Amino acid sequence: MTKSSMISAIATQLELSRKDAEVAVNTVFDTISASLDRGDRVELRGFGSFGLKFRRSRDGRNPKTGDPVQVDAKRVLFFKAGKELRRRVDV
Image 1 (cartoon, helix red, strand yellow):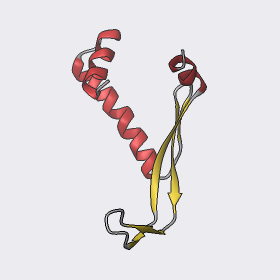
Image 2 (tube, rainbow, N blue to C red):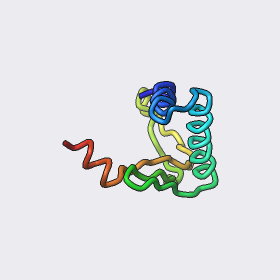
Image 3 (cartoon, rainbow, N blue to C red):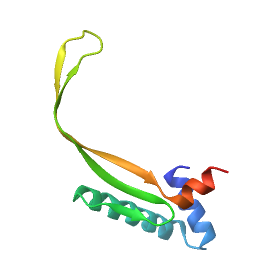
Image 4 (cartoon, helix red, strand yellow):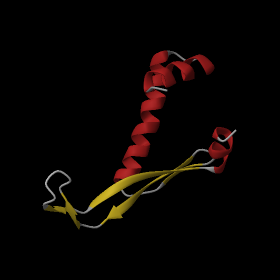
């Protein structure tokens, strides 16, 4: 499902204008993004949780040449599906 099709589905189900549904979807996505940017965890009951894991710097290898490469530390986004979502998908 694309963002556009999600907006259309919400507009149809809730009998909203497409513009109002778009504002709602963008607000939800912006709020989740802002929370993750601050380092907070986002939990949507029945759906899942988004969070960040910290990966420390490490020595890696260039797969083409085999030369050692320094990989910088970074934050990595992860998603863990909730029980309800796993149950619905695993039918």
